[in-house]
Length: 81
Image 1 (tube, rainbow, N blue to C red):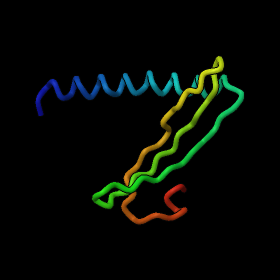
Image 2: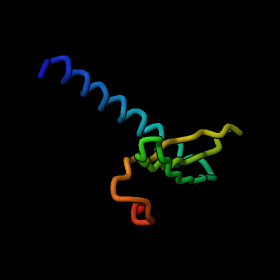
Image 3: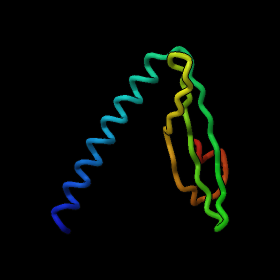
Image 4: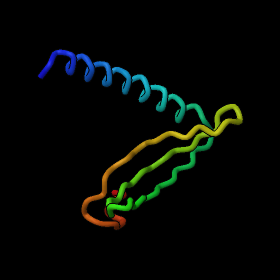
């Protein structure tokens, strides 16, 4: 493993923490939250499940991606749990 890979992963972790803190703050301070769940099937029959939160802050709708996962065991309600 090259040393730049370790530095890159450390930077990604710090960037993720900053985005996570901003997301938590945005969800805490708003009055209304809308959650949507969508499953997408690609042309090669792969399925992906995404959960978005939409918050309104200063009359602007802010979409926030909360969860994104590759569905490998089939489409069912169990995937949401």
